[in-house]
Length: 131
Image (cartoon, rainbow, N blue to C red; front, side, top):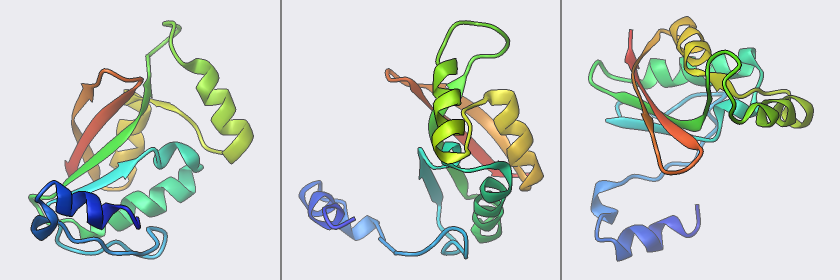
């Protein structure tokens, strides 16, 4: 967080970004165009994830988008990053999830996946909006 203002200034976008500290388990600042959770959801069990996601949902406007950057496991027995799931469960009590599992979790928080975008890394970008 301390490096962000300098980087944003260097990129010439500091006037377009608001940095606000907080705790997503308590609340999320309302009215943003985009909410970004990067490698957050996999750290927590379902109840904690639902708290974060419901707080995001409560803060979102009808046109807001939630972007979740996470490893999205492949469905079924397709080879992939299944060992990451075991690591998350053992270390944090969290879990890596498939797109279907993420969709179910998001639905319980009042959100709908609009698309899942692969990247050139192991992570994908999951875009969601209010249900």
